[in-house]
Image 1 (cartoon, rainbow over the protein chains, first blue to last red):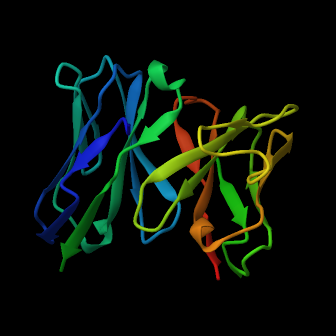
Image 2: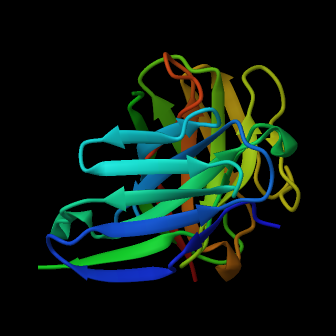
Length: 112
Length: 115
């Protein structure tokens, strides 16, 4: 079964608001990565967080990792219309041969 | 990060034909991967393209249907053979390698529609 599951499936917010997306997984991981995909195009790498890290920041993005709960969250602050995209988490786990396994994704719509 | 290009960016094909997708990277990389993204779905790994040896396929994917070539460290091709409408998907290549080897970088994808 799929390693990563995300919620919500879809999220609609107003420009300027914060958006939080969650990812849960099932096995011990080496790292967890977040990606953005605009309108069926290629994936853009956002952040990689390692299993021994708890929080990372990159601009308006904040990622947390709770290995005890096997979950991660992606927070986008002060959202913009250009943040409208699908967001995927992907886990790198020894159990899966160190290959990336993607979650189902969250569709974010930011209304201006 | 690596710059990856794919050709074609999109195509519409007839049932029973084959399409070869090319993936070019601007630097030498150790690992290259091919993924499929069916409409409205997440990404599924098809295979790992190994330089100098046969690709390693994931469960549910076979070489006869998805032959892969990897002639050098910057280039790979994926062929979708004997296509059916169920093969309509976005096909993406990705690479791992470079200073931050845990990170995978993705190409822009090839949107395939099979009629």
